Amino acid sequence: MFNLPNLHMSETTQSSMKINKMSSGAIIAGSGMCTGGRIKHHFKHNIWCQNAHVIIGGFQARGTLGQALIEGCQHVNLWGEKVHVEANIHNLSGFSAHADQ
Image 1 (cartoon, rainbow, N blue to C red):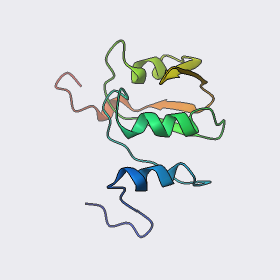
Image 2 (image 1 turned 120 degrees about the vertical axis):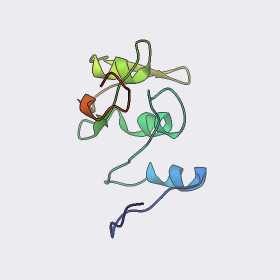
Image 3 (image 1 turned 120 degrees about the horizontal axis):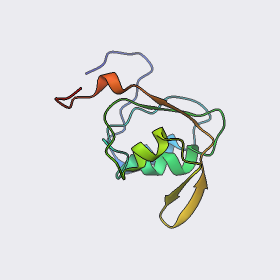
């Protein structure tokens, strides 16, 4: 889909887990409201980092992790573990695919 020289697609769980061991890079994940899937694992490994940035590009429904992050929550609960949010959260709501956007 993308023809970028440094883009590596993560198609397996194992390759996705390797991303969390990288010291820098960008993770592009398509997990709608941030409520499930690999994005939560990436949050667990990165959302506590002050130099991390989370860019949310779309509508986030009330009660979802994505909405909580946009609203500035200080902690998130990931598999029973309370993780402090230090990452910079950015909201690009104009990229929503919902009809009202």
